[in-house]
Length: 387
Ligand SMILES: Cc1ncc(COP(=O)(O)O)c(C=O)c1O
Image (cartoon, rainbow, N blue to C red; front, side):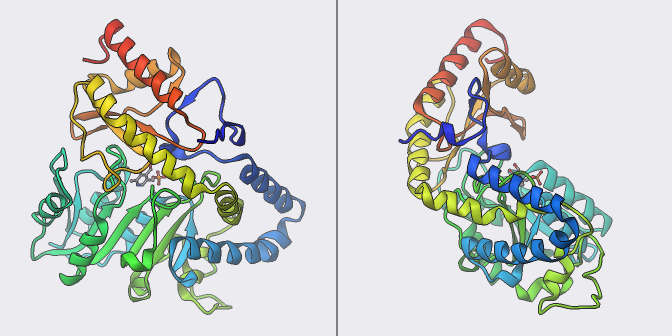
């Protein structure tokens, strides 16, 4: 595997096994970002009103082609929380309606759905998926147990956060369509990580982060809504694009792209991210990373006397692996790993279980995982943070 460490700005003293949380930006992309910000500062008016808008239209087109959708149906937003808040706030809930989801969703977005559903007298249903997952069929059977005659929509992560699992979202979307439900997919971890073609997937609504696996600077994500559902999605910010004096060909773009003054330079770096991935044969790099994830998974489970959360294969695993661990103090374990062993790795807690979740990106190598293994063994021996 080629060593990409020199291509990133990450502190070389830290073993960085947490690409999944906020990504990391390669130097050429970050340079492009700073160049765009400089361009903005040199002539703010021309950039914000004209030149930047042209760059934004081009960047949106390139993103649309990268994620497989029409460029009129996708807008940049800062993060998936923004995207899902836009949707949940506008969702045409009636009292008694249900949104069917799982117990493996990102906690911030559970809060979003609970807030807006409750406000409307509706319910956000978090159907439990049993762990460990034994098969795709088991996930589907578990998921649909949460369905009722009141279900109006489904909301599900294509790659889960704390557990790092790829869920069979295509099958869930297909079945949801047969049942006449609106399908909303949280693909925060998907673009640049596993293959994505939103139109082929068939989800009505999709959000993804570009600042994770596409390696954009922080604050670049997107919201996709298909034509059939655009009419009920209100802008999160009512601004000049609402009842616009100069409407464009797309009300969706007018509504969701015009947002008041902001630095949208991160959105403009997407062409540079795509170029970086193409120039460095990122599909092959990702393949090597997935292999490293899989080759090490059982070893870490054995080390922690744990059972893997799914079969260890590419149906369920990409570049993330969550090792089940037994700790009463996940935050303390995280801090110890960082401070004593200089390893940045998250220790998420979800449904009363804790995990140490490693991410593998092009700049990681086997030595990084070996260092993690040594640290976990040492912590188990020398502290009470790991049982
Ligand atoms: C599954 C999932 N959804 C959404 C998000 C994005 O969250 P935010 O909007 O806070 O960037 C994350 C971030 O890690 C995630 O893992």
